[in-house]
Amino acid sequence: MQGRESSLSPLVRHLLQLLNMFPLTVENKRVAQLLLSTGTCPRCIFRFCGVDFHAPYKLPYKELLSELQKFLEAEEDELVSEVPNPPPKKIRLQEPEDQIDGMDSLSQNGEGKLSVTEDGSSSSKNSNLNVCNVCLGILQDFCEKEFIKKVCQKVEASGFEFTNLVLSVSFPPQLSVREHAAWLLVKQEMGKQSLSLGRNDIVQLKEAYKWITHPLFSEELGVPIDGKSLFEVSVVFAHPETVEDCHFLRAICPECFKPAKNKQSVFTRMAVMKALNKIKEEDFRKQFPCPPDSPKAVCTVLEIECAHGAVFVAGRYNKYSRNLPQTPWIIDGERKLESSVEELISDHLLKVFKAESFNFSSSGREDVDVRTLGNGRPFAIELVNPHRVHFTSQEIKELQQKINNSSNKIQVRDLQLVTREAIGHMKEGEEEKTKTYSALIWTNKAIQRKDIEFLDDIKDLKIDQKTPLRVLHRRPLAVRTRIIHSMETRYVDEHHFRLSLKTQAGTYIKEFVHGDFGRTKPNIGSLMEVTADILELDVEVNHFIVEMPVYTLSSTKIMLLKH
Image (cartoon, rainbow, N blue to C red):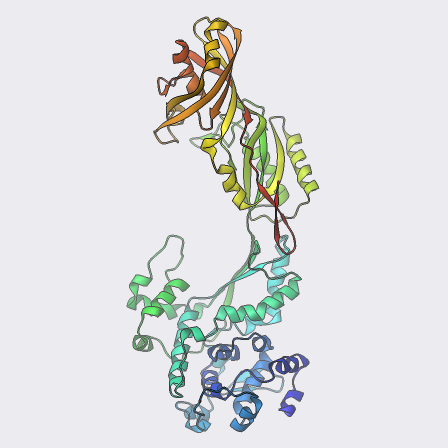
């Protein structure tokens, strides 16, 4: 053992010291020899031998292969002496290598024997065995530092701002088929030793890949890997050579492979796993080789993508123009007005956050000719895939000022970063909110001050409003009961007066004034026994004050604060 350790690198010697032994034991030797001879890589051998601690997987691949080869060449008594605490379970020791079923022919003709050259690189008399027949190279080339550096270079060139990340990998679905075939092979071999191997005893490929690569990514990028991070780096692998490995499953289990609108192929990992759980072992063996054939090439990387989860900005806006819609006003593909509240705010946020797109939402909406005064209307903007996400409170104030200086049609206040949950909070209880309006009313008949004074005494008036004709094209037909909490009048002249109203949110004020051809009952016209119409309307105050939890992004966590 000392002679073997003297030839190892310091890293390998350190890891072996931590382990106090090579992770495989006599119990594993038969399986390890079988898998290696059929073209399985050392890390996949570890997985099938149930090695569930991280350190062995992190060994450099060439040295790991060398160690495995030496382990398999060692005599049994040497292996036993290396195990300080042999497992108490009774294990039937293997027969001499030339008596192992199905392996004597391999050793005789030399095919399938993996050797290590003087420079430490792996070679094989059968070149097909260079690429693992189970992971298709995932745990070989794609775990090495050279590949990690290439991915990190793309991440750094993406222009995203991040203090941690989550790594997402997508493997070809046929890997599940190949792993199933290898499992059946190992299961059969272990049965000869009166041992068993369940599917859950195998270390998952993604787990092993994570153990190896997460520390390397973290070291290279200088940030921690965090499963809750909003910044995601996704790597998608493919293997065109073996893409048809899954196809036989569709003929046997057609119910598992149903087309989906958002899926390019029916052969998804979930569908394949569902079919593998249903298929009988004997049917699988008839359709797919156990062990799986060795491929000629490793996987390819289809794409390396970076994306940041949405961030949310909220605040309140005042609208001072009577010629400005809340959102772009487009009818039959033709734009009616050049701008909107949404665009006057969002255009600035898109540039500063370097986001791809946005979604605007608000607590209610006003018509194009209605001003929004008082405290302003609560709004929130979802910024999709932002490249910049870290802002100081001073920078947010400056952004608010920039928006306000860009137009005299709107003003923004209380601009802040908020959580996703706060958006739902903004929408809660909209029907219970109280709003105050100010309207300029015209009547066809001449009026005196005494003709409008009775309106001041009406409290909590219930009205029924059928969906207004002007919004019937976008709202379902229904009758909605609303409450006019109070009214206050101010006489202007014999055909005009000012009307201030406190109403339940969702009340159609214009229709309450003119009646909408009798669709709103009662209405100002019917109460006064005149024909009435509304000339101007302002939303004076929104009494519902939204308390939104805001967040600041730190290097390690999201901190919730109360605004």
